[in-house]
Each structure stands twice: as C-alpha cells, then as structure tokens.
Length: 431
Image (cartoon, rainbow, N blue to C red; front, side, top):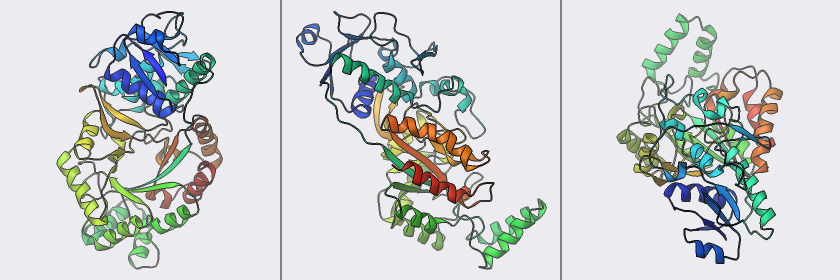
C-alpha cells in the first residue's frame, strides 16, 4: 500500500488519486495529514504538498485540488519526455509536473464549465479544448502520465506491489435511425418521395420503391449481419437504440411499430441493448425517464447504460440527469467528428460534479473514435495509419479501446466498404 502525505485531504484529491493509482495502476493507497504517521511508515510513500518533509518522493502540488468551484486556470503546456503536460512543479519536485491537478482538469472536463460558445447542436466544440489546441487529443495522456509516475515510484520502491490491468476492447453500434425507408408510415414515406424528387435524388427514389416492394433489403437494416460478425470475435459489443418520439432531431421508427419492437427484442437476445437518448431527453429528465422505462419494459431488462444524442455531454447538467434517472454507465464521452480522448483518458472514470464537489456514482466510458470522424478518409490504409497509433498507446497502458459505429454509415453509400472496414477494426484491435 502507498501512503500519501498531504496538508489537506479534499474530495478532489481523493477522487483523482484513486483514479490514477487504483483504477489505472492497480495500487492500493491511503492518505495521512500527520507527519509522525508518515515518518514511521516503512512501506512506499510520497508527499503531495507545497514542500517536502525530508528527502522523500515528493510532488509539489498546484492549488487546483485544494480549491472549490470554478476559477480561471493558467494553462501552459510543456513537453515531458515526449508527452505534453501542464502545471509545472519546479526543481524540488520528483516529477516535473503536477499530474494530479492536470488529470483532474481533464477528467472533470473543467474547461467545459468555463464560458464557451456551443456548436449548432449545443455541444462543447472540440477546437475549444486544450487537447485539440496543443495537439494531444489522440493521446490518453492521463494514463501515460500515470505510467510515468509508476516508473518513477518503482525506481524508489522496487518492491512496489500492484495488480496488472488487462487491455479491453468494446464495440458500440449506435442506432438512431434503424431503417432508411422501411417501417416509416404513409405520411413520412410520401414526404420522403417528394423530398427525393425535389432534390433530384432519383436513385434514392428507386431504392425506396425497391425496399417498399420487398425487392431490396433496407440499407440500414444490417443488424443480423452485425450479430453474425460479432459471433466470430470474443469481444464486448453493445447496441444503443433510440426509443423516442419523432422530432426534428429524432427520426427513428415509431416506438409503437411492432416490427421495430420485435427487432430490438431480437437483438437483445444476442447482445447488450441499451438507450440512445433522444435530443429532447438528453436535457429533459422527464422524457429521459420515460424512454428508459419503455425500452426496459420492451426487453424485460433494466436499462443501465446510456448514449446521449450527438454525444451532447453538457456538464454537469446532462450527467446529473443520468444520475437522477438511475443510469449506472454512460458511453458518450468523446467527439463525434474527431478521433481522440475528450477527457484525456482511455480508462473508465466516475463523473465528478465540480459545482457540488462530489464524485457521483455514474461511470463514464470514454470512446476513442466515432465512425463519423472517418468519413473524409479516402481509403482503409489512411484510417488504419491514424487508428494504429491510437491503439498502440491504449494497449501500452492496458486501457479500454472503445469504438462507436452506426448502422447508418455501415449501410450507406460511401467511398469505402464500411462493413468491411468495421470487420477489419474487430480483427485488428480486439487483442
């Protein structure tokens, strides 16, 4: 067990230290504010404060973990052996940076509490993030910092004990539009025909007729093909279905459509099924509770996992709603159109509500890639050149590599064969 001496034990400090030591590094820790307990401790120990007590392993603390609320934070990013880092410590510190404060800043999405202009669907823009601006979005820096800390501790304490983690891979299929043409009802089908004609999309008109006449299969209806693919690989797979009222942003099949309901129940026989929230319910707790209840009733299982529409994680409100509607896990922490780690980590972590200064029970699972981030790539080689670098870093720190694909892109018309690309992802990254 590692003993940590500090001048003040705060919720911020215990939250961050437990994430780094227990969840990332697999080490047990305990805290003390008593000098005499620290001095007489014979096992591994370190000081996290403004000044060292003697010549121990010491990290000079920034003020961030001892403050409350949101304040202006001066961020100056520097290089630490090839890894970007911030909150420099000075010469006395064993490590050159306060990785606890830096990790807290990224994990809590501190910068998203600060004033910013949201994008067209109400999201924090990726270009506003420190990770994007300083070109480390594609690096799980919190995990990389943790392992550099581990290396330094092992030099001082060669017999340091810890439990090794295992690399994990999770594939998510996000279903906000289960069918392009089928099951849409007379009014929506006629409206689709008129729109296609008006926009001179005659191929879509032909495709729509072919699907409705039963000549062709709906292009988005690839669920059983995906289930067959998943059976070939021993990986964790999850389907998130939208189960909501029709609106300007939510155009899935009616939740009263029996064929749609049967589809969801059939998929639930083979895979985890949970809720992809609607645009409205991602900010409306009453609607969220109703969608959760109705989907749970349909598959006769509790709905514990969520994905927010458009990955619209507005902290802290969106996560507070998930907590209050009794979701246990969320898989929305990432950027739809950029590859990388929004919270700087590839390890699941609990939501910390800065306004309330408390760790909440909701576990956040960050994803590394959403398929919409790949639409501008010309070929598979370009995709894997980018993704291989990300995968290698996740594998290096034994993290969780989570990818999100949608049945729409997998069934759409694109430059690449997306279903083949998806299978290549599973073959390449599940071990």
